[in-house]
Length: 494
Image (cartoon, rainbow, N blue to C red; front, side, top):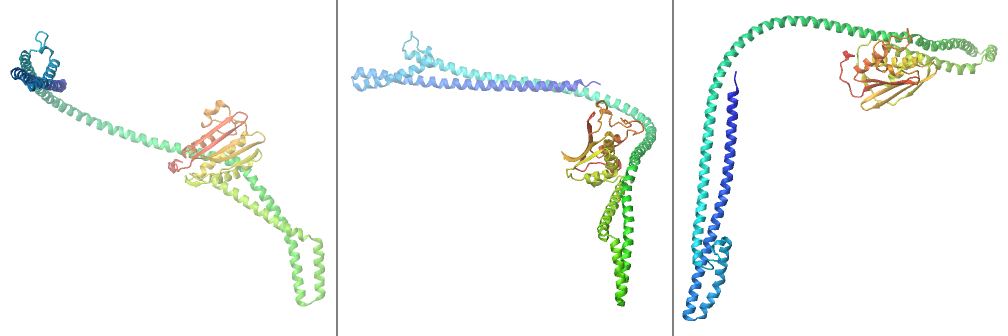
């Protein structure tokens, strides 16, 4: 289908319109310059006419003054001649300035001839002005006719192309109707295919959702497996930490049991003394006092009195320590419900340190550098799992005695928890694989390589980051970064 005709008509019309505008511009410029020329010619005409009249007038006065002076000899006419002679000379100078050919050397000061030449010059100026006026009118007529012819030609071309475009439009409608029928047939075929493909995609989507749920369940199982693995590693240490206070509580209770026997003896003597005093039996009173003296000498009641307070204080402290360990362990080991809470990371760190303390205390000193950081919104169980993994890895990296430094601080819009150790460090070639699942540098049987991978995944789901730096033989530093502002995530994603 040809469509060049209408576009050609539009382009041609634009060219004609541009030509008309240019021609109009040229006409306006010429009209302006012609007006200037006519104005200048008229001004020169007026000047020449003015000086011609002055020369005629002054020449008549001087002729008359000369005649009257010769006839009467009156000095008045002579003065008049002297007065107007400079004026005539000034008028002649102006005429010479305007048109030097009026007074030539051969004519001298022949004013009559000069006046005739001035008349001729005035006639020429008038004819020149009229010629300019006529040329301006002629150019305007020619321009108008030219523009009119161009516009007429454009109109004819537009009419021809419009007829052609109408014919093409009819043909296009016919082709479109045919194409519409073909499209209807294709549409019916496509509907059948789309319906079949939709069923296939629905089945595929259901399969993918099932696979995704299976992967999610597997991930949760891996997380729980890693948690139970950590609990298994910590179980002996936690049992030892609980057994110590239980041991001295048991010892203290046995000692208190002996002290109670002595106090029961004392209570029995007091009862006997009270009864003897009520009966006013002096012999029995003396006998009870003698028995008391004997018991007092055999038993150090002042020591027992001070030791009972210490035993009770130690037992209470031990029971509280056991309570803290059990509470922290129960919180850590309880099933994860994906709950988000406002958490003080320093308190959470202390809780985790209580759980892993038995694994750490034999490896070295733990330094705490807390920066009193603000609370963050997170899942405390999963973030606690990250801290367990980092602290356990730090302890396992120390072969003999070392230092584990736990530092908290804020940086930009993040609360940072830094776990730094003086262990064996990580080789540079392992840096890009350190967070890969199942990658580990530990000896076989010491780990399956999931702790750092799961930790990285947990922190990323909290809209945070887990960074590390390490030097082989000097130690490693892992930094957990959690956002200060509440991150945008769903609890189901955690």
